[in-house]
Image (cartoon, rainbow, N blue to C red; front, side, top):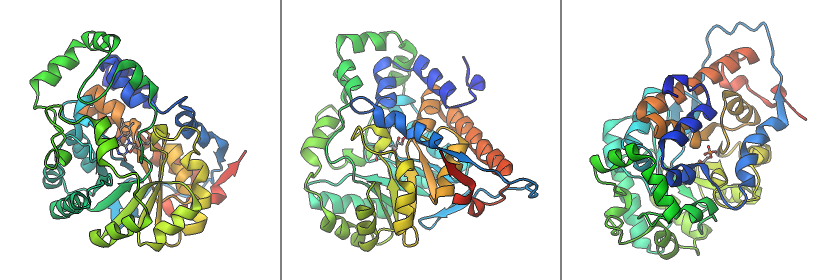
Amino acid sequence: MRLSNCHNFHDFRELARRRLPGPIFNYIDGAADDEVTHRRNTTSFERCDLVPNVLRGVESVDMSVTVMGQKLATPFYCSPTALQRLFHHDGERAVAAAASKFGTMFGVSSLGTVAVEELRKAYDTPQVYQFYFHKDRSLNRAMLQRAKTAGVNVMMLTVDSITGGNRERDLRTGFSIPFRLTLGGMLEFARRPAWGVNYMTHERFRMPQLDEHMDMSGGAMSIGRYFTEMLDPAMNWEDVAEMVRLWDGQFCLKGVMSVEDAMRAAEIGCTGIVLSNHGGRQLDGSRAAFDQLAEIVDSVGDRIDVIMDGGVQRGTHVLKALSLGAKAVGIGRYYLYPLAAAGQAGVERALGLLRAEVERGMKLMGCTSVRQLTRDNLRFR
Ligand SMILES: Cc1cc2nc3c(=O)[nH]c(=O)nc-3n(C[C@H](O)[C@H](O)[C@H](O)COP(=O)(O)O)c2cc1C
């Protein structure tokens, strides 16, 4: 199976499965507890149908959107994800390069493996910095300042990870950073020697967003310990309001799901919220972002930009979310599998297919601009 044989999400996933050691594939593919929310994220799009209009003259289609002050050529962007150089040695460099070719935004995680400054200098497409809130307030201030100096466009505070999700696949394989694999996990690595050769022959694995502030490198601090010891479970609305003031720019909360929280986010000056359940990796049994979207758009959509992510695998999923009022849609695994399978070429192929699907879908819907996608185009079953 080759990249050129990949025509959709499932093909990329299969290619990634064949190329990655089992523990790494399962880290990407897995979710919390019984993975119910993870599955529902995609099936929720099937709750409604698109109602097309015809004979509207759709020879050219404008897919661009403006979200949190950023103009994106496509209504989807690459949501921040951790550890990308573990999936492919180019990691964030490949994703940023591909996002920039498509004129869209990409996110860099606090647990990212390429420095935010390097990416900012290399590409001028809008960049999100995904932040976790630490107990040490001076560390938070220093990291915000660093992102500001680097020229990050949007600060995205993840609020759904106050404690780690129960990812049972990772418990079984022993996946952790630094590696502490079970015997079965080690055998899985032995079955994918090409991955090992790549990993050993490229630049050392680092987490530069954190390395500067704590020793994550030589295994001194594991990600598990980072979450339990460094992050602040007492984080509250006052803390975030202070961060919003300090940042003094585009600021969004990732992982808001309730109307009450969405209104609070607007009150404290956030310019956006991302409805998200972290790809089903945190609270299993929580609602799919798409199911919750209309309610949130109705309550705060006129005050802040409402974005959603989770389960997006098709252009028509993007169209349905936009029709309900989302300003843009984040993708996660949709670009991670092709990254793992084929680096930048993989991500470019995936973004190209999704863009073509959105464009084709808009034409078939009789829409020449994203603004024409409304709830009139949808019927719920
Ligand atoms: C392997 C992996 C790592 C992730 N790392 C982060 C992270 O570091 N910070 C964060 O806020 N979200 C993280 N996410 C969540 C994504 O940003 C996004 O919310 C989610 O992947 C969307 O669901 P989807 O994968 O079904 O598209 C991660 C997701 C995956 C699959």
